[in-house]
Image 1 (cartoon, rainbow, N blue to C red):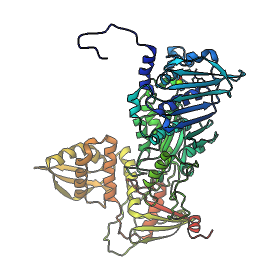
Image 2 (tube, helix red, strand yellow):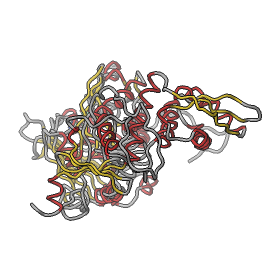
Image 3 (cartoon, protein in one colour):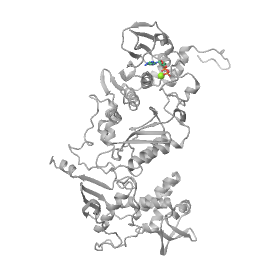
Length: 616
Ligand code: ADP
Ligand code: MG
């Protein structure tokens, strides 16, 4: 009852049941929150096998059975008391948390909004004990027969909080949240076995394993196993392990991105951004990589006590973790030969077929998840990957000395400016151009098909990036300055990027009435028309420029520059030029993809071909 205005009630302590209900509002949002709290308790109790049974999406029953240490009979009442915990004793402990739980309020909160039954037995006890909690009131503790460990049954969730009950979604939705919660606990704990059932059907069965990759694949989709790259990074007190998906796995949403800090699932937009940033140029900007990343740091270097559900953390040193994740994932991607094997859609195409889940019965959530996962990335469109050497060798001369420009219609002649193919021909046997657009190269292992524009674009991009960040690009004075007239808005943008343009070797003088005269232009961009480049760049920046960071601005400018400077589709190339491109590809970081993330190269090995032609 709300008291009438100006008429206050006297101050009174709230009854414990109500206090617990208020706390439950923070901790217990929906069935999945119960699953999370109970699973964490079982892990804290040292369990190695966990079984979760859900009935009707959790509204009728949530039961969790573990083989952990159990609770001594004398402590059972305390387990259900508010702020009673066996995990921390002092406020120092609070900042060096090694267990999942510590607030000592989960059981009390859950019991205030449901009917709880607990059976528990310690190893040294001959029998177990059971207790029922109704309306936050503990019943008698009675001996019972049960296995070592603890079983907690939560029935009729939110029976006492109709508002919460109303907010529960369909059984399938609530169950899928429970399932997701179980995955978040199972991913970082491969040594623990998990079974999940819904209405009596086994939905997930994750046996204990020492192979972490196996656990991650078993949880998220067995097909991922071969497409995961293991990450292992250790620097200045931060260890980062995990599995990141090859770029071709990229999909439309970030659903398959998981971050863990000391085995605890966390949400952190900045760290997810670091993961995404590592894939820059390997996947298209709108695509999301698949990544499961485990960080380990000293417990006193971050704070998890920010939020009752403990999914948000505050780092003591805020930029460090970002840089570490970026370095860990980027290093892995750059150090791996990722050139994909081309697959033709058909029966022998593992990633194009209907995905197999680990379980006999796929839950709606798993099925949906995988369905839109694959839908998001049809095999033909999936961005493909690159081969690059971990440490790029010194930049060879080409294309520092520009190839002499020639008319597209002129006969193809060996350009003297292109170094002749190295005597060992770099493993490339035959090479030929098709439709003046694609290069097909015969290698020891099979054949490569390359998009000449995309590849050259990437090569120029990397070269300009390397030089622009280490000094200034070489430029050439134009014989005739190119005059461009600009609107005041274009002028303003130009002023902003002027320092960057100067680094790239673009120099101009200011004329009257908003016009400029381009005096010098980068040697590397001899194929581009200066006024066209400047105009299109300024248009683009007017569109997106104000939202860009310095680094993004650099990428944007280099994108445009390399696109303008690269060999176009439709341009005939000599054999020497093609060979030079192929050699440069191997020496270029992220050479498998153009700066926009589209592939430069497709690969067919002899084995791929034999398989496709059903020779074996
Ligand atoms: P917290 O986990 O924050 O300590 P809880 O309310 O979740 O608080 O649990 C209270 C206490 O009950 C725990 O500290 C632990 O000692 C005991 N407990 C709860 N669940 C289990 C379990 N499955 N096995 C053994 N002990 C448990
Ligand atoms: Mg707990």
